[in-house]
Each structure stands twice: as structure tokens, then as C-alpha cells.
Length: 133
Image (cartoon, rainbow, N blue to C red; front, side):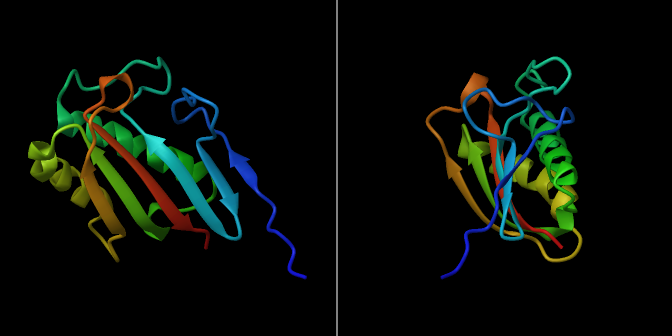
């Protein structure tokens, strides 16, 4: 009988504390499952960007990078992301910032959807799955 992989919570002060009953990420079976991040400043808990979707996207990706680093996983090991946008009209602007972050090497597989609403009035949220390596 196969044994279940041990699960470990990832917690870092380099990313915002969860706003609900979940972890920033969970590691199991050599995979990092990162919860969605919005543009919260980890130090203050306040939204960054004042509605500027590019500034929000940079903070979201910085938050994800902090969670991945706490898990011991480089961002180049991200296999899949899901991007949630409050307005698909922001797609090109978010894509440009996203490409700066994931532009070298193999870009992750991705889904991008428009969401009716995101936490704290965010314009963008991104989650990811990465392979420990």
C-alpha cells in the first residue's frame, strides 16, 4: 500500500499573511501549491498600486516569489499559473509584467480568466504550482 506524502505548510513574512483559513503554500510529493496572491504589502497588509494593474501585478509576483523562496523553490520551477483579472481589458498590461517575471526559460502553462470580484478590490490575483527541484 502506498504511503501518503507528508504535507508541509509554507509560511513566510516575505508575503502577506493569509486573509482566511489557508496557508500561503503547501508542499507535498515534491510539488509546491501556492495560494493565490493579491497585491498586499507584506509589511502593512495594505493594497499596493492604487488601482494600477501593472503595479499590482509586480507586487503579486513579488509575493509569489517570496512564498516560492520560503519553500526552497526557484521561480523557474513554476509549472502552472492561474491568473484572475477583475477586467480582461487589463490582459495585455498584466501579460507584459508577467513576461518580465517568467520571460526566461520555459514559461509555465497558464489559464487566465475574468473574475466577478477579487479579494480586497484587487484587479489581479495569481496562484501557481511548482516542482521542487
